[in-house]
Image (cartoon, rainbow, N blue to C red):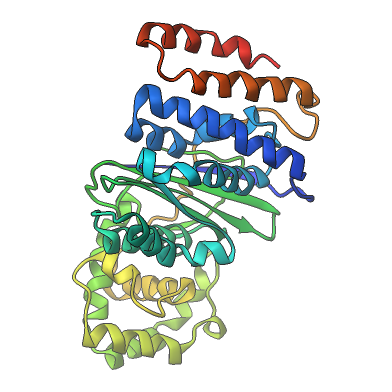
Length: 361
């Protein structure tokens, strides 16, 4: 089963103060290790991937309740927090913002060699690439990915938190993935999509309604490139009728021909393999989708996969100003709980019942 959710957040200027980031690392470490000790590795992985839990954790740590920076800062904080415990708890975190996101495959491989992991590393690397391709290319909602956090357990289960930016609206959209058992990664992988923004038209090639177009795209790239390009040229005037226009100037026939020739020589058998085709970018995929619609008389989904939004509170003074003294005391309390990890199960549960009172700041 694949679980996925999406969140939209506004872009805020400024950086996280060093003193706050340092405390976010310490407090998140205490919370995450307590969850691991009480509920286990897979439950910790599942909670980190949950959009509500992730957002609430960011708010608890004192960051902005609704800014895009919560994702990148919290992602960096939990990665640094758990780094010394990767081997001990069997959970590994790779990637991050910008260049770190692009280096995720190399980081997965490095961790596998360093810790002698027996998991299918190249499968995880492929999944990391595929999830990014789906959210950036197969779902064309105007958000360009710039943050990718890939988390996996030694058993091979994984989670992804990634974020894209829409420069025209200055909003970021966050995508959450969690997988225990993959059924079909290319069809309706969502458990919830959360957003303040609902766009009029989004090309969604992993919607249930797009199942037919997926099959016809595979059929299209098996056709002779000359035949496909001839069909597009003959019916190109139809491209101008769509709300999100893809004009002839935007279609690189040279690039399109190159992709078609590549896939024709080594055609993919499944849609997920097709998405991983080298050189298959957003515009090329959209052009091929429109070509398939014209040639085979099928339709791809253009519904924005968004349901509703949520919010919490934090760093910039809302709904309250961050109290450093209480924050410090909270870290101290939780770290003391960790130091008492060998107490009896009953006594530990009693301490956990006190956590809501500890967090009342």
